[in-house]
Image (cartoon, rainbow, N blue to C red; front, side, top):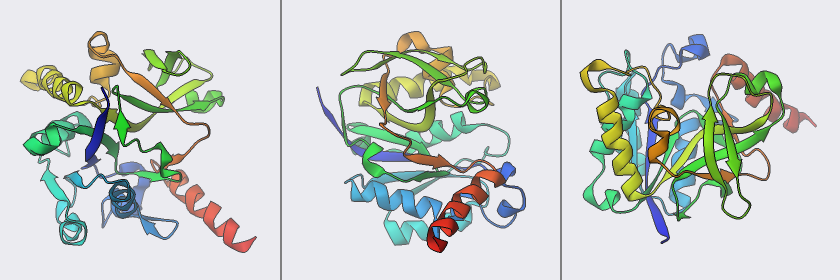
Length: 251
């Protein structure tokens, strides 16, 4: 059965320490890349796809995001534990903030530090939950990423996700995923279970379906024909992304 994606959870609570002084005065999602505010670009891309029920989970300097509500009509959700937990708690808060209407449709979940160059990778209708993947042959990069073993042609399936840095090439998970309503509810329940009594608070939400409870999910691999997004994790990422634009303007 095909489900429409009508809602989005954008995880935007962290400070982004690896951007150093760029985030001293503002959260990373409010940084400009190629002349555009990261999170504004994401919201506009989602809304252009008909995904209008958008929840942004905030933490560090949360008040800096207030204008987004008036400008775009999104909902802000506050994660008061942003400074001592990873995004597993932000997901829990985001899911709890969803309306009943949103929970009846499929949801896209993404990190707020993405610069999506080709918005065709934002799915609007899905039959299975899954992750957006990009193929990578750079051994140095693969050693720092989560790499998925996949199979199939028309319907690709994620069999296993390798997180120990042992892969020299493969399909890299990006922080863009798509969730059927039942799987999203299951993800929430298992995240709550995993963090009970203060455990696993430093986990990514991706640890739940890809590592801790991988036997409970049947995940689809949404593979791009070519790389379609940038993740602005470090100062080098930020400078490289903006340098590419400057080079284009000067050519």
